[in-house]
Image: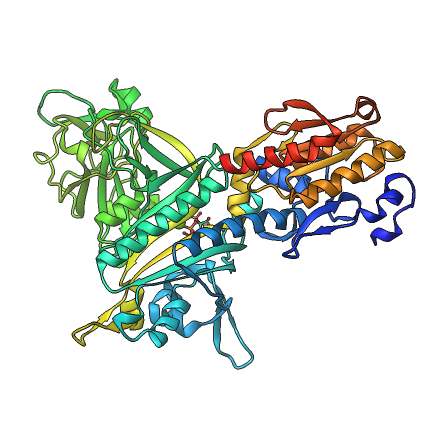
Length: 600
Ligand code: ATP
Ligand code: MG
């Protein structure tokens, strides 16, 4: 295809300047004119966040169907960069690479109990023999099956196996390009240990490996505590790239090291409405169904109102949850309080059927259902609650005196400025993109699927497991989300598809053409990954495309510069321009590249 290019100017002269391949067979130099790197002026209407827009516009990815993308050469090169960093770190921590099948027999998922639990995200199908199969959204079942067959004794452990593989999750709302796809590439690792202490060491190693990986990727990230459900002996951390567009809300203490996903953010004692105890009093509150209306009508702060919210509980009786009026209920905390049963807010109709009164006037006073209250409710002497009668509320209600509470628990969603549960300093809320997740699983899968080992004494015991995931596409997208400007992507050196954009401005000019070829040869010989824009296009267009693609270093060869024996080096990030003598340019660029790689 490239050979058919018009043989004029640089293209002819550059016949020798074909794709350069290094000793490992990796492409180190590439001409843009014969590369599939289609740039676009406009981004597709559906692209909501900047990384999605830029990755499409720069020609890194193309959509095939909702949440399913093809990686074009440039996009794939960045993916490979992340892969290499991951491999280097995983290998150096003693993990071993495997590759597990994408298609998995449903039997394994029935054994673990997840075939029914996983929900519609799990893509299920039948093969020609009518056997139930799934396309792996994750690989705990497959790896546990492998281990229960291969591991016999404590001598075989510890073990950490990882793979870089394509997952499928039929996400309800695939969006943001590679950020939340249905098909996506994940590095997943699984550790197997003889005891808790060993499992904790494996976890610590992976935590460290992840810190190294994301640092080497040049990302600004935070590690937060994550919800690990109700499995005994388990815990979990998420690696979050901080970005406004992040789907996760995070809470950070301004003083101590407390950092957590908002889902599990505990709250220290916070002050709410303070008023002296008084006798319960029924008040006519016509039409006041919602907290703001009621607060305005009663001329009282929203924090003085005790919201009574009815939840239906999976496999159990409904519960009435009490929370200060200005607060939201944290469903993850509530689920934990309910011993792991999933709560769902009752619909207005259902709430009215169970409580015998329209929503907004539901009362805990004399209620027949179990009552749970937020800790802050327990600190109230005086509040406003529904009166269990349409259009009426009680003033001066006191928890414990006027209605029984089955338990006071931390149930609210943390808010900006709430006190840290450890040190009391105000917490800050930020948004993040979850790029990695480490999880101490304990014996959940080994117990369910019978993955055991024989200890020194000859006793069979369940293996203690951990699992560790990184989304590769999401990591690339998060990098773009964090590092771009109005003109395009700004790649960190470590993830850039190429390290240098080589831009000859007048490709027809003999001197320019010759100098370009010389530089291209020198750079690639020095191992600098170079993308040569050999297209016979206007300089303005070349500069625009170079900014859009965002390679860290741009080397411009022009007639004007050559007249002074110089070429122009421009850094994409700081936009700093340096004129370099043609003779030493390649070496100077190699040094700049090495420096940038060192600094992440
Ligand atoms: P999320 O909460 O974002 O749905 P998850 O908790 O389901 O993620 P894990 O099962 O922990 O994700 O998967 C490990 C890693 O795989 C995540 O940290 C993320 O980087 C990546 N990942 C998960 N789901 C997707 C997806 N739909 N698209 C792209 N990457 C994903
Ligand atoms: Mg997760």
